[in-house]
Image (tube, rainbow, N blue to C red; front, side, top):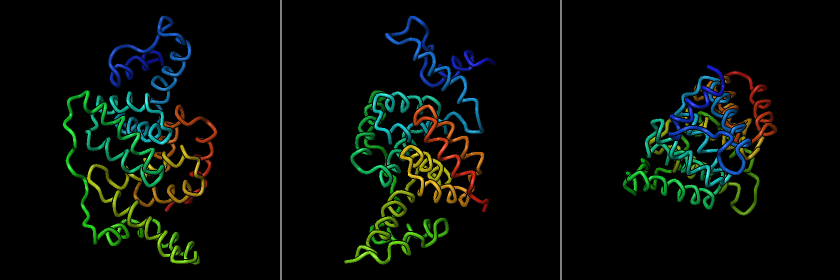
Length: 251
């Protein structure tokens, strides 16, 4: 199947209808270029399933605050079999990495799509951890993957900050979010690697590339995820991330 036929096949699954042609809108050439590249070529690279590709795309677009495209790909994520709960968790998991304001913007866009699909809101609760368990349950996930690196690195901060900052990470990122229903650790780590690549957070990319290996994601899976990010974050960011992943030793 050539890339034009592949594009038509994937586009129909994701969005329904047919991709752009020379009679489409005010910039038909741009739409044809991007659609044939994304859906005719990128979607053909690597081992990722279409449902996982769309979750990666949702994570990238939420990070970029590309709201019109986020709405379109939230719909596409539903169309290829992702549940509303899974899509919600992708966006929720972004919060410790992109901050709450951008996460709330993404949630609003997501919920608009859900409402158009007659999906009843609010969705079922996803939390699994009691208030007094946040640190312990978070550390149970964090420590086997990342050890005490953050705690040790910032221990000398003054005025209680050396204790507070690592604790916030453990309680919020891992205790509040990683413990939730809807995504497993392998999914969360891969998606957050994509978020970090979008942010071009090289130091954290290194840590999370190692983390991905520890939870069972291969380098091939990570490379495929970076290529899936390519149309949305560009070549420089993807090359940076892949170069970091390449240099990580297998665990």
